[in-house]
Each structure stands twice: as structure tokens, then as C-alpha cells.
Image 1: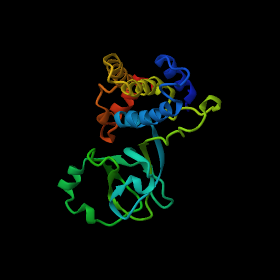
Image 2: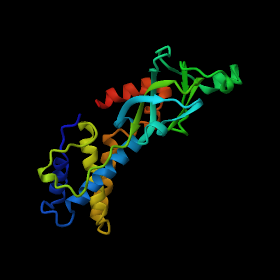
Image 3: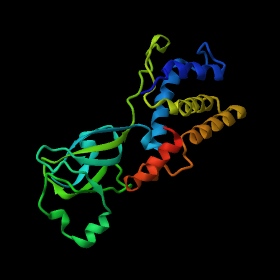
Image 4: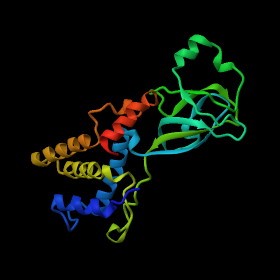
Length: 234
């Protein structure tokens, strides 16, 4: 849970911009850029905002996360079966090619409430395949990333206790993105254009973009994800 208040980031941005009276960069603009910052951070680090939930399967092998969780951005893991009459067992990841090679007709096998394996394709981050094919009674505990609902830019945050919607360790990255957008507003001045890019690069460094973000949030390599999180001290 975050402890950094929205007004804290707004005040810091105004101080750095030397605009504490909100003359050039109004508060609602800064809050709007904070909302944009969430989308940028989650795009580059899908694990920055993860949550779990119970997913009710559709009949068959292909499952679509957004059918159950409209805000889902990317699957991170499938943990276990949760349906009452299922095995309640763990679900393990497997390469689709293995099933394709050994059980070519596996998509048409009998449906089951107990899922044994799931398959993930990074080209379809909101979808996954299950084996055996799911019945409509099958339910799974899943972990996924999502973009937080944005803050209301019209709220007076000077009297609000609302906090940022990702963990505190991302606060500096959010601030740098806000400053990147603020200086980009006056990018016709060479100095401001340089400052804008400097803050964008600082944001990237802060969230570890030099690591392969897609791989770090790929269920095929969850150990890499755990190591990346530990190294980033998230």
C-alpha cells in the first residue's frame, strides 16, 4: 500500500518547475500527467501493478483475461484450481509445442473442471490456453497486471489524503514522467527540451527499463521476475 500522497508529487513537481503558484502548469495538468505516468510505467514494467483474482473459465482451451477482468493488461501467472469440485491443485506452465507434438488433438479432448497446465504467448498478453480443455465450471486463481484507475484531475488535492496507486518505490519514476511532460510543453526552448529528455531517461532508469521488461513479466520465466523484483526492491 502506498503512503505517498498525490499532493506530495504535485508539490515536488511545482518546486522543481519553479511554479508553486500553478501559473504555467496548473494542478489539473500535473495530475493528468500523473495518470499518464501510470500507463507509461505499467507498459514498461507490467509487474508494477499486479493483482490476483478468481477467473471463471469459458468452455474450451482459449481463455481471455478481459472477459473477467476488463482492466487486465497482461497475464503474470496462473496459480491453482479454485472450483469446488476441482482437484484444487496447482496449475503448471507448459510449452504449447509439447502438447502439439505429443497430443495433436488436445484441443478437442474432454473438458474438465480441473486444469493441469496453462500456456502463454507474449504476442497475446491478455489470453492463455489451458489443458485439459476447461468446462464452464472451471475456476482458476490468476495473477495479472492492470493500469490503475486515474485520479480525478478536478479534485483539490491540497486538502486530499489520496495516495498514488502504485507502490512508493515508483514515486520518483512518476515524478520524472510528470516533469518530462511539463518540460515538453515548452520544448521549443532548447534547454527545456533537454530537461524533458533527461527526466524521461531518469524515469526509465528508475524502473529498470534496461532489463527486458517483457521477459521480466513473462509467465514462462517467473524466476526471472522474482529476481528482478528483489533486485529492484519493489
